[in-house]
Image (tube, rainbow, N blue to C red; front, side, top):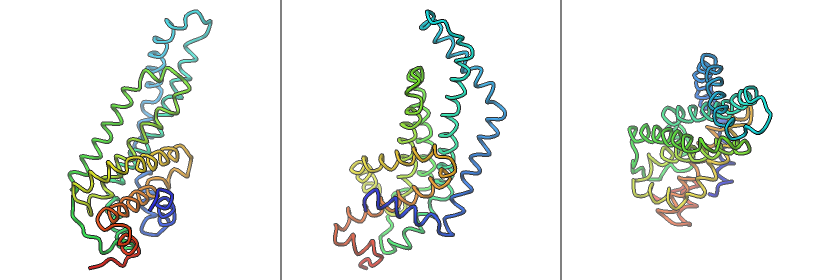
Length: 252
C-alpha cells in the first residue's frame, strides 16, 4: 500500500456512517474552543504582536518613510490568522487521536486486517503522552521559528512546516499502537519516515482549505492506519502474505 492508495482508502471510507460523526465533532469542539479564545483575546494579542513587530522593524527599516503602526497591525492580524488555523486543526487532531483513533483502527482492522496479531506495543497513557509530546514539539518549533516571522514570504511556510511534523507525530503512534510491538513501531517509524512526512504535509495543506478541512482529520487518520498496518504486514510476513492479509484472508 503506497501513500496515494492509502489516501484513496481514507477518502472512500471517511463517508461510512461509522466515520461521519468522527469527522464532525472533534472539529466543532476545536472551533468552539479557539473561537472563544479569539473573541476574548484576538485584538489584545494583535496589538501586542504589532507592538513587538514595530519595535523590531523601526530600528532596521527606519530609513523608509512608512507608518509602521498600521503596517505592523495588519501584519499581526495576518500572523494570528496563520496561527489560528493550525491551532484549530491540531486541536481537532489531538481530540480525534485520544477519543476516536481506536474506533478508526478497529474499523480498518475489521475490514482488512482481521487476522493480524495484536501485540499492543502502545498504551492509552502512551497515546496521551505522544499527543502532548507532539503539541510540545510544535510549540517548540514555533518558538525557534520566531525570527523567521520577520520575513513575510515565509509566513505561510512556517505553520505548514510545523503542521507537517506535528501531523505525522500525532497520527502514527495510534495507528500502530494496537497491532505492533514497540520494536516494530520504532522500525516502521524510522524506515517509512519519508512517506509519513508526505502524508503529514498533504494533511497540513488541507488544513488551509475552507470546508474541505473538515474531512482532513478522519481521511488522513484512516490513511495513516491503512498505510501503517499494510507496512506492518510487509514487515512481518513479506509481500505474498501481505496480499492475502490485506484482503482479509490471513493465515491462522
